[in-house]
Image (cartoon, rainbow, N blue to C red):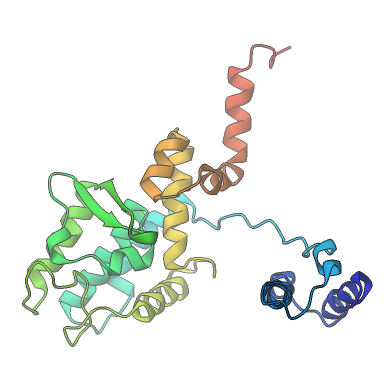
Length: 252
């Protein structure tokens, strides 16, 4: 196969309206296959190394506005499941408040145990790669978790998951995703209002409030600062305003 053959393959996928992200994954598989064959002495094809992977669209984190986030937090225990038990409503309110208040990934929040309940305004969180970080916890988050714990009918010890399903087992992520879907519909929020959007909102609102990028990186548990820098694009208008006010020649 020549480089032109690989490019024809990519062009065909483009004409068939495959997403560029899908084509990039597919071509990565093909390239990986050739590397595997070459490593095992079966065949070698230098042409594939001269073909670039399709350029991916630049994704910007989809964050809620501060007003939308406040509406979501204040309304969770009212509109989410009107016919649910009080402790379930308290659980849902605590989860949503935690995701936005601490910027956790959904998996991080659901992996918390009762032994990791916030104490003295901080909480230890285990993120990707089992890396742990210390996260400051707002009083509103602590209060929401305490209210849920006081109503939860299921007993447990320090190793019991913090967020439980109605039968007492660990809360399924799909339940949390379904909760956000119901809230979206009830409150008229955009489709991008997912559990992960609360993490994006946490970072974006901190940055808008003057938060330090390095500090936000630590709070989010990002290994690379470049990942955190995506949020500067969301708040580009504020950065331009700061630049105009701070640069000595901006007013000339």
